[in-house]
Amino acid sequence: MIDHTYAEAVDAHEWLKHLRSLIMCAQCGKPIERLEMQQDLFSLATVFTAYCHGEMEDTVLNHADVAGAIISPGIAFREIKIKVPA
Ligand SMILES: [Zn+2]
Image 1 (tube, rainbow, N blue to C red):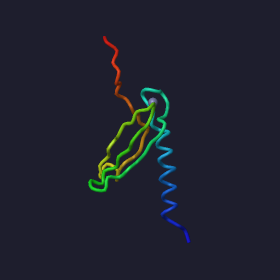
Image 2 (tube, helix red, strand yellow; image 1 turned 180 degrees about the horizontal axis):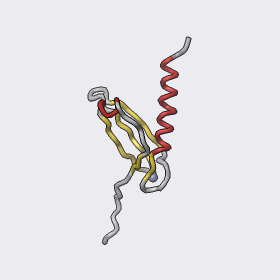
Image 3 (cartoon, rainbow, N blue to C red; image 1 turned 120 degrees about the vertical axis):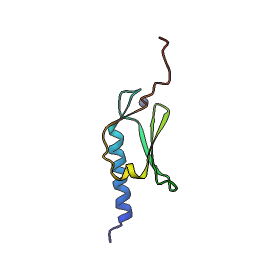
């Protein structure tokens, strides 16, 4: 018997790893170190958390966004926290 739950979990893990490799860190100029995905059971929103260079950044997609989502390469940590005086 095939354990669908296990197979789906592995797929999700592989998918998340693939997705991580597509998200560039604006600060480091390379793919982010880690990506986690969590579902908010109340709002059904999906929260993606990017981890890199000791910082984390959340991106929230609502249920409708996720349903029709096409994942494309993205950039995390675009906001520069330390500003150089002009
Ligand atoms: Zn980084």
